[in-house]
Length: 310
Image 1: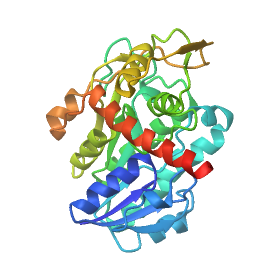
Image 2: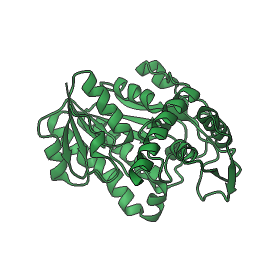
Image 3: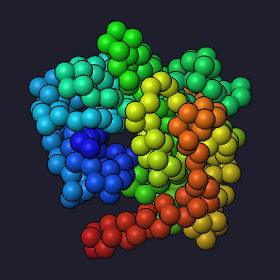
Image 4: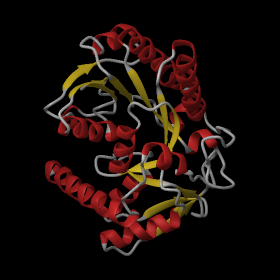
């Protein structure tokens, strides 16, 4: 099968590309390498550099034809979306339209990587796909807009596109040097023998889902239509996460509490029941198991970084 992965040099995308190559697919990676890394791209895949907002570049990536496009390219930083909502909208909504247009000319299915927490907003209970959608950031709004474009193309052009609302994805290759990805940040700080910063009281909860489980759900969505949550259905507080990170690292955790950040959700958890019924997907990786694998990766990467600095 021929597949395109936009954002295929990124954290989740590179894992997806590995899985596609492993099953024997002919894979094209489309990435502008602004946050993705060339060295992450599987040697068995073809890399096309370009920006999803550039219609000609997207058309080039689709040049060889493909049965499916996994659209993971995105502006995923909530803070950037607040500071530059126009840029966020262009990347996440216009970029998706560019992909949909190219896919329509090729007869290609689009599997779109959306977001759960940012779209649902505050959750009173595990959010199902029909729960109210109340984004609290431009990022959530742009992702929801992109989902609606997929739905419109499905209705008007009789397409079979699918949107996947990911929970808080973590795992190897997530960048520990930055603000996004609390698991990577916590483990990165522990690898550098630094204390952990907690914003607010630490009782905020999230649905942490391991990257290999996310890849499995994404592959299972091929050939389906609709919207599906991809999560565990399990809430974990920031304080519980900090304790778990300390356990897998074998380090006593030191916490420093900072003022809460504006717009941060207090509770975010997904109901994965529909994905289990329709896609046959259920997250298989426990938090401790996933954190352990992530810790081993980050500890090794941090050691290499320090060796290089010396």
